Image (cartoon, rainbow, N blue to C red):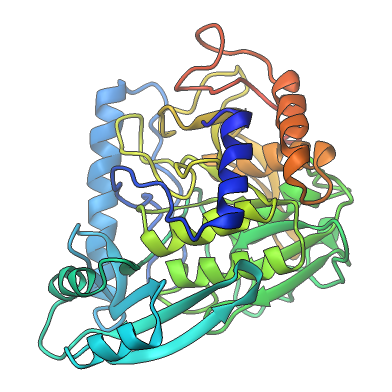
Length: 421
């Protein structure tokens, strides 16, 4: 994790420069690859297994699910040049002017659409891959044609905990208003714990549409009653980036969602989704930070040897790992220098439908607990207030593992009394 000084410096820089997101090693997406109905199976029981075996097992499962996704939706999904799942036949870019767009059009890259994201003061352009070319080949060509722009595939991002669609389920509703927290995930069901306090918007086909994962994370943020969130009774702006689209959860959708939240002056946003480094998403994250937004993200469940997952690994994002009831890190949790804090991630009581609760496992469910506690110290976007807020959160942390900050627990455990324990 970057220190609070780095957070302040990054945010200030993003206010005055276009800035690309921090580049780093590209990692595989989370093991939570959805099937055609996005009914995600639970994580395998890896408790007690040696860490090497955990990594091998999760890696096999991740690759199997990538294969299953490609077979289920060959018309919507394909692999990019780094073997990462992305939207088929589409490349995305920002930092492209009209002359540049015309130049690449002459090379066969027709522009699908151009959208301005007002909350981030950026434009997103989508280009169609030329006929007869693979995404991987076209990606390489377009990057060479637009060396000064942020060009990438429209990568897919997946939940870092079990989820699934909730067909024919009523959506939570309400007016969020000033000071609301932000959530980028699936849609939120009308569970009593969040009744009247969730305002939703869709950023994918069929969105907003209720999901198990989005409902769970929302309840852990602002739930009250049978499920008590870390910011219990608060209000929430929830962006559904999945809907009913097999290629939902893409970088473009997340960037647009960040713009909506920034436009509504959200101070703290939770993203319990993971995937590869993406140049467009990196710009969007940087721009949101430049407007004073603090982003809290799950490190993912790809195992201790997996490369860092994004957006958690972007500079300035507060990456959260999960621990069990004894304060031990989940064996499937990601690790690395970017880890900022730990929170309960096993046996976490959360809403899972309009009329149901369950105890869940995964780093997805640790992230909102940290975000909710952070929101107590950071109630509106203000770059000068970032230092004080992050320091206050660090003061709450209970040191775990090696003394001081480490690559497993970060600064330590937050919200130990949360999770319905």
